[in-house]
Length: 237
Image 1 (cartoon, rainbow, N blue to C red):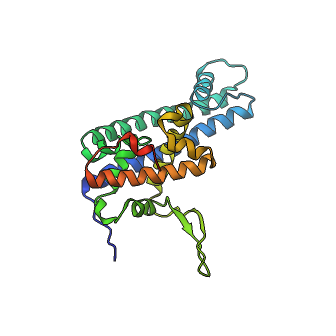
Image 2: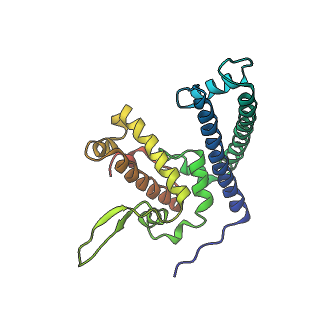
Image 3: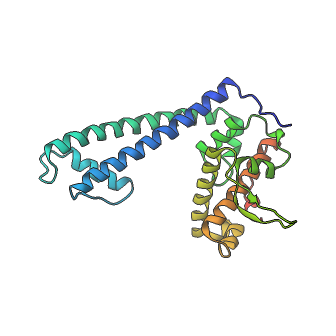
């Protein structure tokens, strides 16, 4: 039988920072969508992304706009104030996570993996209390849910999409990191030859999950060995 290792109070507190950040980021997205939709009803639209929302907030803050009734502006000012407060709070949480990351040697080693930043390294270090409970890196990747789901019958093994079992937050962080690495690989193919060859044969999302699986295996190896990641590990499959 496998037993879940007990996390220390410090690890639980660190993970609370991550959970709080995710919750606040969801609320920030809701506010941005609300501001965009309310202004779109009045014919005021802007491009997607940070610059677009900055443009909309400037319109809301501007007094005397002929396309924005006073009552609508009063409501949007409240939403804009809440958005600004959320931005400040998220920034404060990220600063605390950065401080915790710099104080943890395991987290700093994990950051040497391409595609894993401060947030992802801190989350893995706080979640995995004892990497030795996994027999291999594949077991660790399976625990996160980054391996194919088996649908075997009649002695025939069929592999489907990833199982999506295990820790959803770590899986999301690894896949997002893999997507970022793939975009850099397109700009500099010689730095990631294995990824470049795979992109030539498989769809982008399939390669992203495969790379996330490899990142998880390397993360387990670093936690076990106490070493840092070498660039050569991304040269071959």
